[in-house]
Length: 462
Image (cartoon, rainbow, N blue to C red; front, side, top):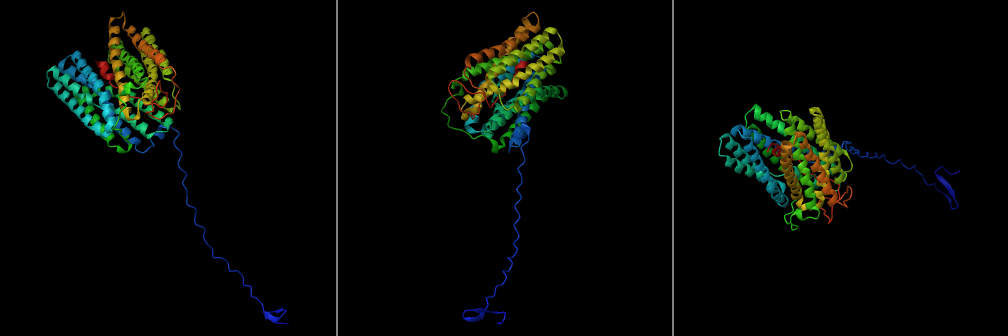
């Protein structure tokens, strides 16, 4: 028998092939799977989602500081001038001069902002306005001739529309996200109401607790500080469009009719305030009026959580109905009833402004967004002045002051009528991007409200 390492073949014994066991493959450790963090879910609260955007908190903080003085200047000027000269008529006339000058210059300032950028225009314009306010303060303190008060009050008219600039930033940051932009615009409107709740109270406290010029001084410093902080946030600033050949946004189809609606809506605000001041006639008039702004503030926040907006005509119809509540409450002679009526009536303000400024955004080219919104604010200011005059006249000459509340209800009905006549064919809330105008009307949707109550304190005191 051949050895074990030999094997028989037809040719004889041969070496047997050696089959070696296959050596085990070296163990290779499986590289660990990289840990992929699950992106955090966006907050359920739409306002928390809004301020999770990079840079949103920074520019909003600066704008809030700059916007608070808008509710302080009117009261501060009246208290300061009336205390120094002993004439509320002079104080009201000087305040009205500044309001009128601001209405004339605001569209021009806004056009410069659109063409050259927010930081480049807003900072020097604010510095010039603050200088005028400080000179007005010195003239009143030194009992300078009355004509100097009118001159310096007109010099403060270069103040930029800080609320409009903030809304323009939201429109730039939230292109393609109409739901979030709707929330941002509602937040801006609620902020306007909050500033006109706090500003007059703060100004009156400073003027009475410190010295008559304290309100104006603090307001001027806050205004300049806020604009500087806001303008420093360059990452969120909208791009400029220096070459604009479209002319004024006033020429856009449908814009004149829409501004007529804003004019009538402003008359609602101006008449409601002056009539309430005449009806209450006491130190509680301010807190009672603040309830109207509080109602609008709460409604604005609630409207921002909604995922859709409604037609402007529907908002105006609701405003017309709610503006009858102060009249009915005043007929009872009960001050608590009037306060409750103003609170509920104010809830129509913010949704109307948010939806109304939507149409301004739709009708205005993107390169002229600030100018278009400022035209709407100018119309509101004109309406506030007309409403103050008509409401004050009726409250004084009617058999009772209560009849003055007919003016805001009538003005709201007029705004509704104008909208129904001129706004036929307007669609429901849409998602088109800002600045894409179309002839014959615009869809209502993502809002771009303006500073609806800008200058109301001035109009109230004048």
